[in-house]
Amino acid sequence: MAEKTDPPVILGHNLWGTLTHHCGSDLHHHDVADGPDRIYMDYNATTPVDPEVVRVITDALTDAWGNPSSNYLPGLKARDIIYYSRDTIARMVGGKAADIIFTSGGTEANNLVFHTAVEHFRKSKTSAQGDMNSKQLNGSGSLPHIIISSVEHDSIKLTAKHLLKEGKADVTFVPVSKVTGRVEVEDVIAAIRPTTCLVSIMLANNETGIIMPIKDICHRVREVNKQRAASAPRILLHTDAAQAIGKIRVDAHELGVDYITIVGHKFYGPRIGALFVNDPGTTTPVYPLFFGGGQERNFRPGTENTAMIAGLGKAAELVSLNLAEYEAHFLDIRCYLEQKLLVSPYYSCLVQIFQLSLEEIRLILTAIFLAQTFCPTHAMYPFWEGDFRGVECCPPVGGCWPVWVLPATQTEEINLPIFF
Image (cartoon, rainbow, N blue to C red):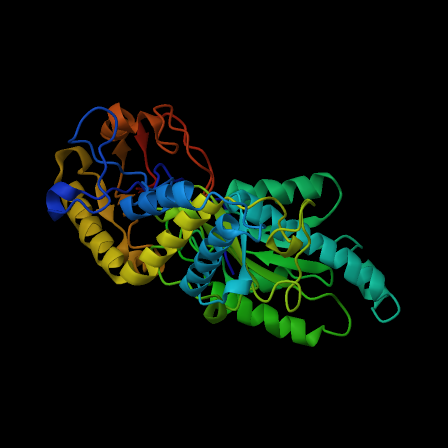
């Protein structure tokens, strides 16, 4: 199991750009700020919108403006576009069209999953009181219990904390290994209670790029579900795949999850999202957050945003068609960046930490380095000045996103791992 001691401090963001001057390609290269020589290096925060996606969105705004709920021609055209996009997105993650529910973004999708898990637990417990082992449930409290990792995105972490604060759920925050940055399968299983209703672990971390063992976690949790089928509610399985889709292959059925969060602006699409649900409303529960006109089979009411859905569908299509090319490109430019950093006089204190066996469990667009002895603070200044002043994880005061977990303090020398 992962040690519960304080892990290393992260001083970077997995910044990424296309380094087109090296690659000789303008693939996904966009001028940033006021100069053509600037290279955008924060692709885990957001990606530029692919020109093909822009074209599809523009065409939909012009030609498919009808209400998709209408039965005359403009509405039918919009409805056809939505169905095509739904099917394309589903195929990208190994599902079918009926498994996709469109949302405003990843945050809404994540909130929908947590709301569903709590409601499903409550209603399952109420309807099965005669059959359920209430004594066993009361041993761990009557509230639904949720398990997440300690390094989840705020849309997961803060949602869980809100439910905890409001007395609507108990939450376990499973720490990651201080060696690998991964959540350990055994730690997740050890956290399960009779009242556990949801396990939600991100597929890839947005700052370290570490890929979590979702397939193994799901397999073990499903074994637990079989054992407790007659005595406790089913544990639902969710992964926020915002950082993984478009960078690695994601297949819902191979992973074994019930829900996958999909975020368009992380893979060259528009800023909307979708939630994959394995047979929503039948095999897997969905309880809507709000109510309205019945769109999205009543799972997510509200007139559909046809143009953005069209763009999301095109972005998903491009991922399905070009993932191998994307991966090769990412690997090429990551190697180039790492090699250049290692020979730069500014970064003589850095060494790569592939000896920690992270090579196979991190996204290929994440560069990872370790301060061999001491890393003078001034060595980081080039990342803190100019274009990098706005980067979340590299402010000049030494603040850091709590991934492994502690914010850095502004010191002259730092004897800690550094991640880019």
